[in-house]
Length: 199
Image (tube, rainbow, N blue to C red; front, top):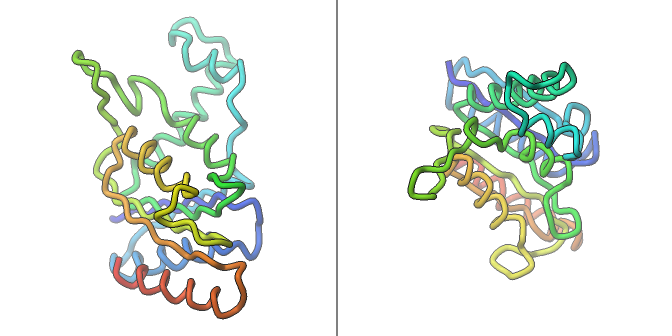
């Protein structure tokens, strides 16, 4: 059975454009993969805290030396990792907040990026990502127009972190200019939906 993991990162529970696009991308994948299982993780309501001393301590403490609190942290991280490892497709809904991804999405990556679990260093010093074999779709929703400009810091970051973890088959879908009036927004959604239809 095909498994699709949808990860919503908007700070709004209702009406987020990035979530709308992610929903539509998932619906397109389901239409093309009969019987697909869909798992939705909303980082607004079911995310993880920012990194702190306790989390870092748990990640870097040897398994046999972990306290019960550290074991609980590791168990939470392990569950997130198992969830994405089990997926064939991963669909991210990503708004633009102050020129970057939402902090809850950054925290998500911080909780799943673990040495010797989701990436490892080879003897020659190069990195091998261990979350492999996924098709990833990133649906961006932006008020302005940033694609292919120096102001787009989201796309390079996501290419880097996803690639670092082993996810290199990534399709980016852009809906830009959403805050520039109804005509601009309509054109942005039309372009994004055309890209979704081609998935």
